[in-house]
Length: 314
Image (tube, rainbow, N blue to C red; front, side, top):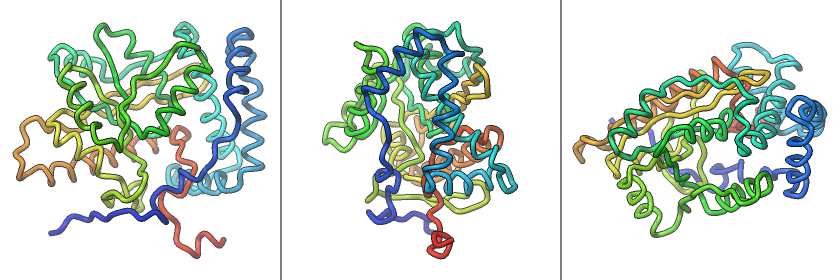
């Protein structure tokens, strides 16, 4: 049976690329300054106004949030549900200020799968850390910094890498993330070099820039498309893949999860394609699991399921 894989087109590929991020680095610097001087509790109050602004004046994001929450909650989301979704997003962005400035004392962070990560470090083998646009990446980074020898290079498209380091610099001058620019000829070579050094390579498995193979999966009971590129890269590198997510659970609580996703170390070349398909299905199942258990944490405010034309007209 032929795999259910297609290639995304520019018309349907990356609606998320067209969603403009509002605000500026100057505003981010001001927010970081005020937050660090006022403290997390006081500086959180404006988040309610920010979430309310987007609740009222961002109809596209509001529509896609409603559709996603309907699937994740198994019911029609209330206005409170939809506001809470936006508030969780605003909170994780705000908490970047404290997490990047190493204010771990402000948070109650629990970890699931720490033994898995320590065993991987002890083995001296590199691995892919595959995440999603869910919760907080920065809280995962803070957990990683606790472990001696833990080093992560993020593989991402160059435009996003430049944006990420600009955000980091605005929040904490002098800090930057090690990134590997995807789309360049030497990207795979750099990834291989980092893996050989026993480093982790972080990738995101739930978005595409288009013109790349996609695999149909079931997510929250409906069909969706996930890019195959990140998992195929891990298979080519013959390395393990670990699922990661940092879930925000209200107040100052975060829960970080590491779960085994796939191990391509000893997969024969002829069985690689099937192993990649199985791993992507497993990734989709984990997304489904955490979207249901922590529904306000998934921050894909765009048409992830690619609504039918008649639904767009409603």
